Length: 219
Image (cartoon, rainbow, N blue to C red; front, side):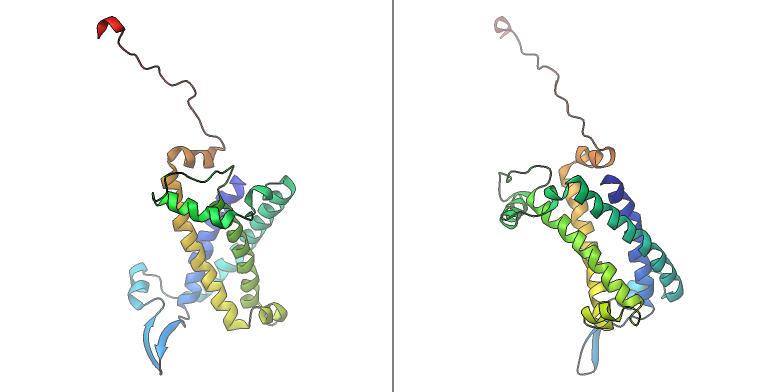
């Protein structure tokens, strides 16, 4: 699970970067009324700040190459969670949504006592299950955009080519928010928690140094 987690990080980064190259080549998402455009989703100053113009061919080349690694890595992750039984620790339970709210209140220091948890708390169960569903959605909507004629049934199920493009774009925004929240949670959990994600184990000191107290006659 750790391997697929870390492999997916650079892959998803390249997928988002190459996807932005494709999007900037045709920046169609705007907010307007009565034929007047008030602002674009990515205004010109945003593009200028990153100094990345629309490079459609380059973006498509990277995107369509790394989508295979993204898909294969996702399949390996899902198969492992199924056959290893890890899915039992990931799938939300009946009371997970209620406990997730309590986890949020605890993280915001509004609630003092954290709800009980095993390997993952309720919020993590919901988030990790949602990210799997989002990954599947990205592959489906991506196929609908990539080959709308060959995969016309998938494109139709997505609501058409333009709807699939919007859905694909919204899922990408979801990844960005998930990544930001994920990093914040790791920082809150501390360095030892982050170290355990890399190494697979956490060093716990069971024998702390004894505290030397003065003798009764020295008081």
